[in-house]
Image (cartoon, rainbow, N blue to C red):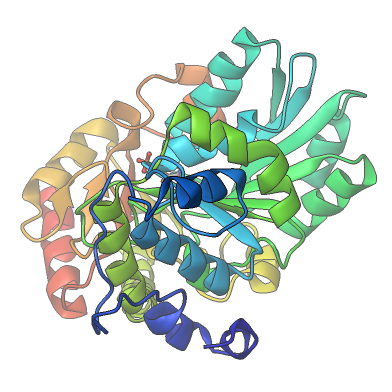
Length: 397
Ligand SMILES: *Cc1c(COP(=O)(O)O)cnc(C)c1O
């Protein structure tokens, strides 16, 4: 299939067929090439492969056919020139942030970050002489004010974890371009179906494929997507020599996940919209944040850059930690877990789990209260979920 033809496919087609690489057996489903190495017909062909004169695989730390299919399918979906798959989302974030920087460079990042992402910019990067400034990312003025002569990278998530704040990606990209810096966007919460950071001007997009891309809670994985030149210059050697490579088995799991990604995200978003509207009306709920509602604090930006309302909901129950715990413990279908993007609906109390390492002050800045809960909506029947949540709210009174 010519790649020219593939480029015109709609996402649903791309996610079923994009990047497929059939072996001589003509298998329908993608093969798992669970191999470390590759053999050569002759000493001469090994030499030619190593010189780069003939195409082919050398070692699975460098590249592997199943991993290659996952990377190509993600490129086709995202509209990126190139990609590198990683063993986890954090391996992707760490490489995307650090590989293009050196000692003396400066990062500006939104302060509302996934906990480990915040550790990378706030704690790891400074050890190597890369300083970071964290800002309230919802106002573009804050990004502008934080810029220094040595600012080389901007980093953000949108919507953010757990309070689903939305950052204006196009505005930050314009600022990055004006000073010759690069913008890296962690697009996990929006999913590739509802937001296209590269089209909005971002230079690099990263995913924890662990979340919606697998979508069924099975394996870890990640991916970095960007232009070929940046990946060649910044990631190619790092991947070969430090080994954050994705397992072929996990790549296969993620490939199969991509086939159903549009269906799952559409269904989960539809159910999330119903649950958000229900929660907004409940007397036990003091705050509700959902990007798909007109009362979202950045509803105008949502309209510009997202094509769906998110599969996640953030809300506060009245009565603080005691009420939040009583609510969680009363749920019968929704499971208590710190994960998200699963077929199973999952509830998280950020203050005591995912965000427990932050100071009280930092939590307050992010709008995380003792009664704040994050709900990741799964694929269960919407009415069953509404009943479960309604019953649990009564129990939490
Ligand atoms: C989960 C997550 C990560 C980390 O991904 P892992 O696959 O768990 O390493 C990074 N960013 C965001 C926004 C996430 O939700």
